[in-house]
Image 1 (spheres, rainbow, N blue to C red):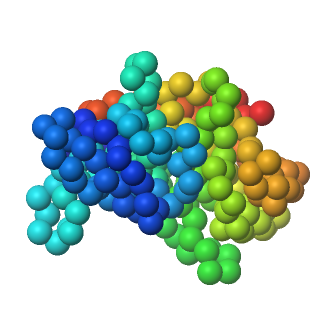
Image 2 (image 1 turned 60 degrees about the vertical axis):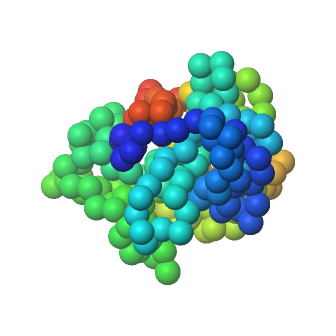
Length: 233
């Protein structure tokens, strides 16, 4: 998935109200960017961090910049836009580039199921069990090489695991797919100290037959693409 317009570098001044961030561009101008991330962004929102912003000239948008990346200035990047994983994964699923799910030819996003829920992707193929795929963007890292989810308490995330468990009980494939938007991650884990309830729901879902997958990403100012499968610990 390529960004629609070339990104521009900036420095973070402050993030506030979850979805707003004041930035300083290289020419010294200060602008407010939209931050498409409802999480805590733990470790990613310290003042002074280098960022990459996507400009836009859409008259319908009040903010003319969107915060897309954190540049760790060591060759690694983190993607902070939580809408990116679904867009990148949709293209990968349609191209059958996710090995564990390559047997499915029909990819339908945002399909209603269960009780007041939507599945990120519903996959189907004649002769194969329907696959319900829930996607989570992973950006937290507190230990070198380890990416963790979640970065804040997420009752909604636990609800999604319970809904997947119900689909598994009905004989469908139910898949929790962690898409790691960090290029410095080699493995994935659950941050049970941040959200013990989510950790319990995760263990219960696995026991109920929910499959767990994780993939890394390749990230740069040009775009984001699916990377290699990562182990879940």
